[in-house]
Length: 112
Length: 116
Image (cartoon, rainbow over all chains, first blue to last red; front, side, top):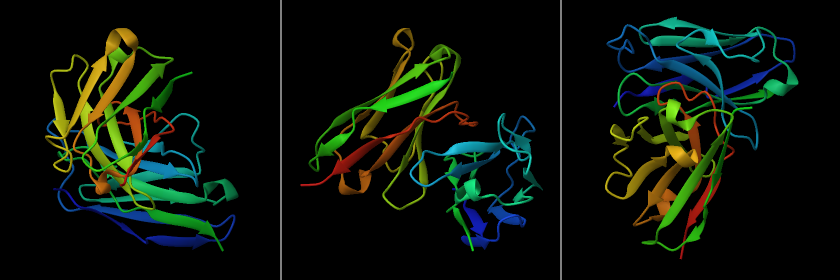
């Protein structure tokens, strides 16, 4: 199985400051169709997950542009340019290239 | 708007069964692969199954293979998860989501507790 690791697992941030979450996969996520199926999800406290980013860097409709995704191969990053209070929650990366599709352990973002 | 609503969760004894449902609205279910993901209390997300548009392509995580069955009724715009031989470790919130790889829309989840 592809193992997804995230760092850090806990990320206290100051409002208005940037934040960055790293996600690494244990093998390349390039699918046979040439796509890399790497998604990022946000789960606010008490809510269901919400997709933020798909295929590494494509931001979903309605997602603020302070969120951005990047990466290639096995290393991926989610960045928040200026953290706001509503960004508190757990962020998961997920690979959907190799079955079983797997999630990272999650990074908990809270405000200092 | 596009919405998914799960139902059918509850308290069940070990070895028991439950059938979860996921009602879709705002889009045509027959246009989408569909997925079940679960989250144990205080834990992360686990992808457990997806089903193709016509139901011929189905896959399960090893943790539920042979015990859970995913199905769909496109005419009713509904997705299902039949869960048999339930174990304590199946205790979780179960979410349905649209598409297999993209998971662009999620329901609010339904809670399943397996306990004697």
